[in-house]
Length: 81
Image (cartoon, rainbow, N blue to C red; front, side, top):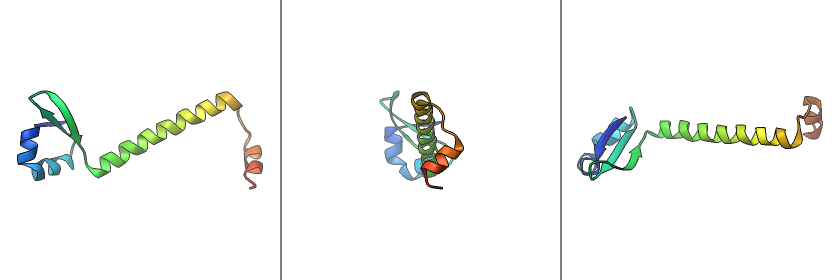
């Protein structure tokens, strides 16, 4: 991950944003305090989708534990298919 200071980010926003298209850029203030991470829209979308997928997987596992499994035929009938 690329790292830059907050003051460098302010002075060179365009270059930092360009760099973020290739890899996440960590922005630090006062030398070491992490303030933000700038990423490309594509990286953000993939990360958000991965988090949503993980939540769906956890929810499905919880539902199976609580309700047991459902046969394909029962599911199709419940959905009217």
